[in-house]
Structure formats: C-alpha cells, structure tokens
Length: 572
Image (cartoon, rainbow, N blue to C red):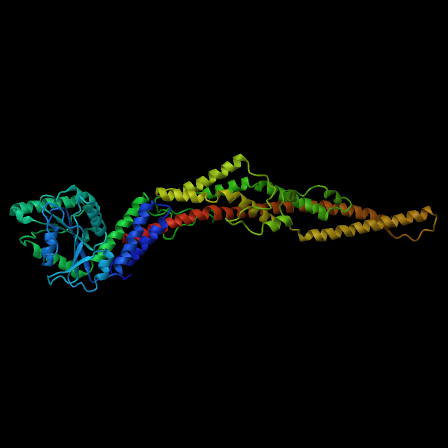
C-alpha cells in the first residue's frame, strides 16, 4: 500500500492496518457483522490504494428525474447517456474519462464495463460515473448504486427542486454518510425551472436539511444542465478535487473511521481504556502499559480477590492437612532414623503420614515431573489427599467468579463476558493441576537432614558399647557359673567397665533418642512452615497460569483493540 504523508495523525496505511488488527482482536467477542464489515473496509482500502492514484472517481447519484444523465452529458461535453424524464433510463453505471490512461485496472476493480472518453479537455484525471437511480423500481439498479457508493472516491448527489427533501435520500444515504462530508458534493439541478428568488430559498432549505444530516459543511451547488447555469462552478470544484489527488485517501480515511466507529459501537462502550489490575502480593494481574491506577472505566481487580482464590484453592487441595502431615511425617522418620535401636523398629509398624497421602514418594515423583498442560488427556498418580468437599468446591467457584467479575468491572459487555469466561476457562483442570503442584512441591518434605545420619551412627555406636558391655558381663557370668578363675576386671572408679558400658550405653541411647525427638519436633514445625509457604507459592503459580494469565491476556487483547480503534479513528 502506498503511504499518504500527513503532517498530523497516523498515516492511512497505519489506520488501515489498525482497523484490520481491531477486527482480528474483536473476532469472537464482537458481533460478526461488525467484524466482517471492518475487514471488508480494510481490504477495500488496500485494493484502492494499490490502483491508480492519479485518477479521481466521481459518481453522479440521484433519484429518478433528477437529471443525472443530463448533467453527466453536459460535463462530458457529448451525449453519452440516454436521458429520460419520468422513468429510469440508466440501468448500469458508465464512465466518462478525462485522460483515462492507466485507469483501466481501476475501472475493472469498480466493475464498470461501459467507458467513454470525454470531449471536454479540462479535468485531466477525472473518471465520472453516471449511476442508476437510487429509487429505481428495479432492485438490480438500487443494488448497483449501493455497491458503487461504497467504492467511489467522490460522491456527487444530484437533486431537483421537487425531490431534494426525499426521505429515502436523506435517511438511506446522506445521514449514514455524514462522516464522508469531505468527499461529498450536493448539486441542485434544474434550477432553470425556478424563479431566481425561489432558487435561494430552495438552496437555503436544502442546506438546512443537510445540516440536520450532519453535513453542514458539504458544498451545495445550484446548476442547470439544460441551460448551463452554474456548470462552470461545478467544473471548477471537480477540477480542484481532481487536481488535489487526495479524494481517494479522504474517502478511504472516512471509510476506516466509520468502520472503527461501528466496531466501537458494537462493543457497547465505544472502545474505552481497559482497567488496570492490582498486582496483589506480586501475583495479581499486571497493569497495562501507559495506564495508571486511576485511569480506565473500571476499578480493576479488587484487593484480595486473587488472594481469596489462592486461599480457596489451598483449602480445597488440603494444604492444612498436608502441612500437618509434613510435621508428623518428619517426626516419624526422625524416630526411625535416630531413635534407640532397641525400640525404633516398633515405629516401622506405624504408617508414615506423608506416604499415606502418597506424597514425597518415588512413584509420585515419577508421575509428576511437571505441572500438567491443558492438552493432557488424563491425570495419573494422584495423591491420596482427601478430595474437596462440596463447600470447598463452592468456595473455589465463588473465588473464580470474583476474579472474573472484578477484572470485568467497567469493560463493555462483550469484553466483560470474555474476561469472565477467561477466568473459568481452565476450571475443570484447576484442581488436578493444584494436586500435581502439591505432589511435586511435597517431595522436599521427605528429604533427610544430615544430622540424622550422624545421630544414627552415634546411636549404633552407643548400642555397640551397650552390647559389648552385655556380652562382657555374660562372659563373666558364665565363667563364674562354671567356677572358672576370673580375669582381672577393670573398673571406672568403683563400677566395673562392663556395667559402665551396659548401663551407660542404654542410658546414652535413651537420652540421645529423647534429644533427637525434641530436635525432630522443632525441625518438623520448621519444615511444615516452609512446606506450607512452598505449597502456597506453587498454588499461586497454578492459579496465575490457569486463571490470572488468561484474564490478563483477555484484558491485554482489549487494550490492544482499544489502541487499534484509536489509531483507526486517527485520534492523536
């Protein structure tokens, strides 16, 4: 597409691209009719900008009997169109060309097969079309007018003193095309039938009607194709428009602005700013670029809404139960690893609270190398954490609804619906993803502290000393029973060493076990708190990925839609 250089505002190709982007972003959110119309305008603008820019296509449009064909012949300087008085004679559009070299592809695009060379030498670059009557009794005529009215560069509406106030003209064409005032002329033809003072009154009344249509600045020319009155002024205006070589761009710009306005109206809010969202502990929805917290029509995501979602998910996923199991499991494994060897084996008959929930096991680790993707067909290796109750599931549903409602505050209806849907788009897989996150995060809860190994070695050393003392005493008892001579018996003060080893080993083992249990209780509490924080962080990541990110993406889509509409409207 060739660029139109302008001193202010975005260029035409930027506006067309912005309109196409807005239509793409609005697809599936806005009514299909508005999106399709916007795309058609963008495609039409691209096609017209790629054709001859040295020619200006002006169309003479009007009602039956307005004298379009007579005006067409007068401008062309020869009889090219058949003239009728009370019935339509123009069935298909025909073109008169002033220096038509290079205009062939343009007329092919317009689908105007009948082409003539104008006899008038002035007006180089003008392509003048004589359209069928817009009020013709034949539907094909009216459809041809509607088609070409959407395509031509310059619209010249021809009216006559009897029918210039026709409601069909004003309601069907002029009023809807109010945004195209820069590429429009209104010609009051057949003024030779009126007294001079009546011409002024008629023109004044016509201007009043046009002002009511939003076309106050549109030039109104009083002419007579039969007598030639006012024709010089009409030729001059057409010559100026053709010489400027800007009508095509002005027409396309008006089309783009109208399509953008239609998209804005279709969303119900005219394309306002998107609300910024609170970040909430670093995990809320991020604020869009260039939008402060006070900007936008909505108040954004209320404080604590995303936190409420995380808390609801944590309760539904059984985080308090898992945290308690982590503390108990830590103490259980500590007793197994550091308890008195004489009694620790009894602990093995009691189940590990974490393993009972299928947390921290090798099987769960292998089943959960990563969080699930939305495309997973099934989930295997679930934990045995009790499922959410009906109340907890209802709390999660409420939290999801709160996120959607808060994020949708102030948005136009279609976008608000899309944001609410985005908040629940992964609701069915949310709890499974949280369960996987809990299983993966809980793997660290079974990691053995290093001091367990040291204490375990000490316990076995103490146990070996106790066993040695017991064996020593057994040997001495056996020798005494057999009346064998007693070997020298070393002592520690008044107490024999075998007794010291036996009693001291037993006492030391019990004391080390009790001290280890105290340390395990403290370590279990610390590990439970750390695991609780890690679980809530993992749940926050899941809620961010499956809930907040889709909402954030939808809000970003609306922000880009709003910016694209702003560019398409040439708002700076």
